[in-house]
Length: 258
Image 1 (tube, rainbow, N blue to C red):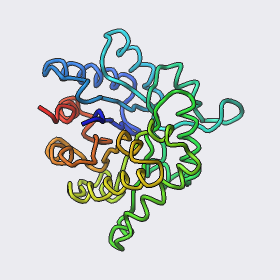
Image 2 (cartoon, one colour):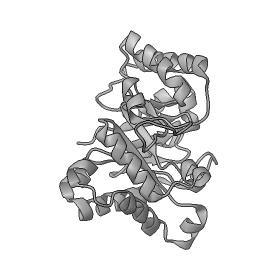
Image 3 (cartoon, rainbow, N blue to C red):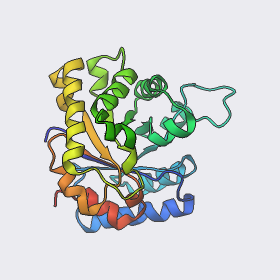
Image 4 (cartoon, helix red, strand yellow):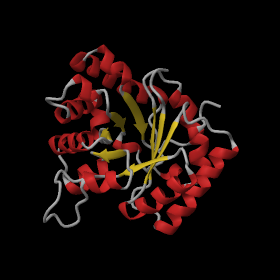
């Protein structure tokens, strides 16, 4: 595969900085004990903002291969925006990835496709990699318009982007009905949408861009279904929720190739 697989653990609003310390150390130990090859699969943790400094300290001190990022970002550089976090704050902490457009941000904070795209642009301009989330609710899936819906989210967010810029992002497809519910889209369901995403990228930005852009699956991905998901031609990794909060299960998923 020309695209390096990525296993990204989204901790959401879980774990304080002490628990974060314990989890990262445990994850590093699990990966080291099993001789994990980071060139075959990147491992990324996405902790709450309050844990990032702790994660940075561990990763830097122990020279770990684990990468880390943030769950959201502001479109503003600085100023009177209480509660917001800027890209420069994240880059100073060594973050290399930032998630935007997660379904929970869209639902609870009314984030539009255009805002998601603006956040992705800020992240890319700051030298970090955006992880742009998209996905449909259950009623959209039942109506059979899920592919159209997801592609419209992506196209609205990336309107006006160049092929060169799009090639540097990660897209995470997360069917909302399968997040934290224990319900999982089948590998074939996931491939249908991830394949459609790649086809749309080829149509809009060219075949070369589509070939290098990584597309992740998110939605109750776990050790017992990761191999089947990763066997699909257009799935390049996973955005993992609950399973990333346990060092052994997350490490097992990162070693899907073994």
